[in-house]
Image: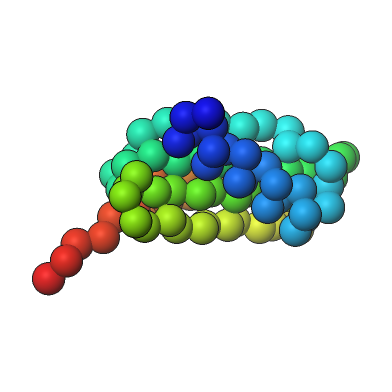
Length: 94
């Protein structure tokens, strides 16, 4: 199992338990500013109770959990913006 697969599994398990909406309606994984991410979207149909979960890692020591929740299904433009924000999370040592 790759790191992306592990992050995706973590997102699916966390979201399934927290949102109680059943299986995710969409999943994704890939590269991000910190390293890698796994994400899962959950929703109760019809169009209510939306939640998205991301797990991000630098593949060394940092794991970040980020969530987005809405009582209604959000506008697709808003989801793109949220994904952009989360994908650009990074840590710098000063």
